[in-house]
Length: 455
Image (cartoon, rainbow, N blue to C red; front, side):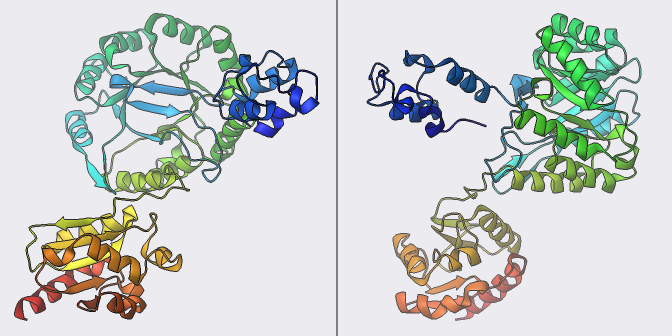
């Protein structure tokens, strides 16, 4: 764990009340000020002439990288690892789990599957998602050609083979796209050879944590550190989560260098995880939480992939900074003077859920978003961040009365109790209580629109 400013200060001359205390030679007025800056990495350690050896050693240990970041793919667009905590409430997770799909070069439906994978695209809460990567398994003589075919799509790729010469040839063919390479059952000398010849990131695997430590220790001695860890061929998932937790704890809490690398899990190594697509979904979700930096699915299913994206997006946001959008008026559809006006909070999930249902209704709407610190409707209401005064202020600041001829404002059904409060703030407006759930918005809007037209 990183040292605090107070812990550092106690080991400085000021904390020990030595004659060099508060000498100001470092540019800071006191040793305490220097310690605070040092804790925040805002000043160089060597600015102090009197740093004791024990403090220097502690700082070097605390600043050592817990888990290496490994990059692969075109322009290094895929980054895995670099995590610094075990639990997201301590400090947010860093690099989202990479979800890859396994393809075999001998697959008769290779072109169809590749097309489906590379054309997949979905938007959720304002972010566009595609399949992160493809792992290509060498299973026939077309391995090199298929590697080039995948690389041409621009997707990140990992190459798997039992044959070192085939792996070298395929990797050299697409080396400019920085593929992740995986020589299955490779010994330390094979991995060192590939590192020197290809200078590409590699997956290194073993059947147990002990064997993995022995392998990575040998690689570190030979300055091979651009690696991803893998526990393989366990045929059942009995100890998988326990082993991955052990690896992550060793990296984060003990900063144990031989295990301080991201971990990839190939579901095809585990029979229990690949019985059907639902088993794959269950295990991929579990591994996202505990603690695989890269999960390779045996099959691709758009619905399952979307569910994994949803889980991952929720896990990899800062829990102390909810996703939020800019508070303002958003026209959705071809709005006009008769368009309904709805209001909700600036929690991103709330906004995109409501906006999506408005779009599906076919009714053009002005959606007014209030400032609520990224809270959902009920949470914001409970925290006094979604009140009649705040809503009225948003209506006035956004000049809503100039956008429409009517004076009807639709509020979320969950805060129906705010109706009278808003009415007092906006006496010229009629406050209509809308739906509680976003899924019911289309039906409500169609009825509301028809009533508005007949008035």
